[in-house]
Length: 475
Image 1 (cartoon, rainbow, N blue to C red):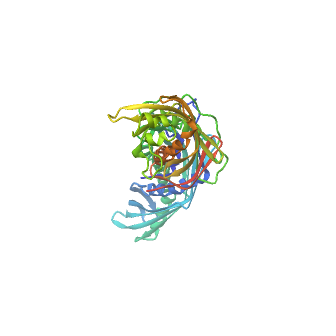
Image 2 (cartoon, rainbow, N blue to C red):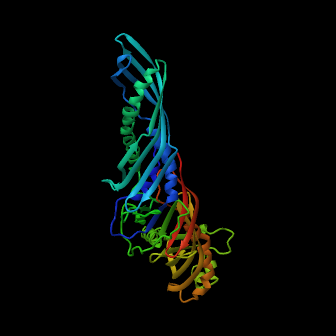
Image 3 (cartoon, helix red, strand yellow):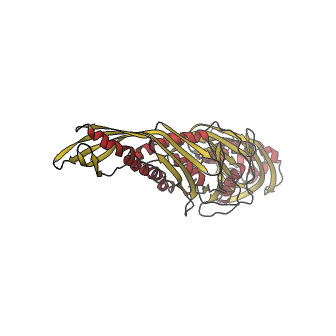
């Protein structure tokens, strides 16, 4: 049995709590999102209520003129359940309240009587119950593994009225059974309504245990979405803070910086809002730099054949003559390597990355040994376009500005600016496309089951990105 209402509740306690840590990612569930969860949850609760079982009932009553009558109601089965009215509300500081009103159910069964010692009669009956109300409070907490667990805190249920229609038998039987239907049968139903709703809530716990504490990004990195504080429930939204930090797989080393405080705007038009801070992005840069992913060897076969520039001593010798004189006719290899963590910043409608790197140029000797020619210092500025792809945040970068200075020369002094066009071309043709191929794969957002984002919008704001989206649960 699937109950989708607690799918939203699971966002309250995605992972183990890490109190005292500031949030790198913030999530807001709005009343609109809660309403969508209610719509999905009602179908699930309706199916659960169809499993109501009423035990066989028997007894003895004195009914004029028949005298003492032995009766039994057996094989009672629920045929239909209707939940025309329901609502779910946020309870500030607590959690959720689910209210179901004017519900109804229909059932049928068999009846049998014996009276005047030898007289017997039997038949079937139809029963309609109206005015069912159920009000329940739902709490969310972390279980022993740090994963979410939902439970029913309180529940009240009442049955308004019941009417029965007999098929077969004498008319005086109606009076006999009406008394019981108005009392005993309603009580039997009331006793089962709350336990069944509680079961529907509890049935979500095995599904919630499937949530991953860590979401794998690729062979180098994983991202943790642990809660850093208890959720904040207001009258209009539920807000929670997640760690939102990248780590090298199997080795959780904290970066030399920490999250800054940021607050989501008071928007409530979408079901869900996710704020991703610069801390999360910079923790990714820290992880990939530490893993060596931001270092790259570049050879001439990586340059398009149609390019006017190639990695050989002839091309470089046109700008640095001593290279062509000392190493004529040789291919070259470049090693581009970051020397410190790139820094990512978010400003309104603008995401930029500042990187400091070195590029070491080598001449490839006929015996494949590498002879260093020079080392340049690179200051690189790129613009980033960030977008949501499926359940991933992805991106693409373009070169803004490149600054070159000479670090070491093994071929004598030369004008570094003469190589500016070459290295801009190398970055645009090789380095940036490789980085974009990795960025296009994206990294996973907090998710549950077969969750799909719909009508998603992403804004880059001061120090964080804001994703506003509706949600669908598939299947």
